[in-house]
Length: 124
Image (cartoon, rainbow, N blue to C red; front, side, top):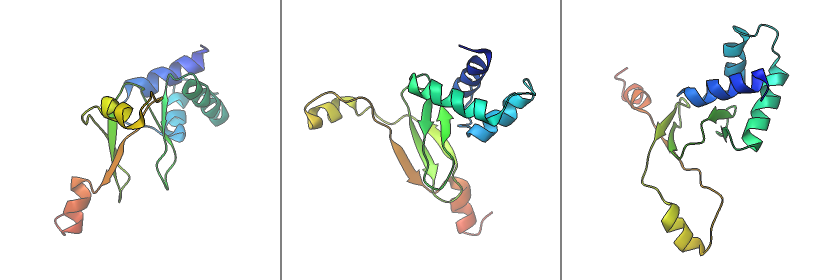
């Protein structure tokens, strides 16, 4: 791994923030002032292709990046907040239904987060 690749990997896998490429860039720019956004994208793509980092596409928002440890997400439909959650593992059920192995599954549940629900009720 290059120094940039290692720094990006560590930042993404040790964070709970589900950062976008721009956020990773802003964070690493402090330590590596000459780093470019293209370097961030190229290394994120390499890390995703190698299965070391997980890309989380969210409709209407930039992709976010996360560690690959098995977990699920809830996404607020209004503000876009993305939060880790561990639902019951569906691997065995999916294998039975599919009748064969599969690569992986990615579960995202869309809802209104508590803050957006309060604002909707006028309790902000």
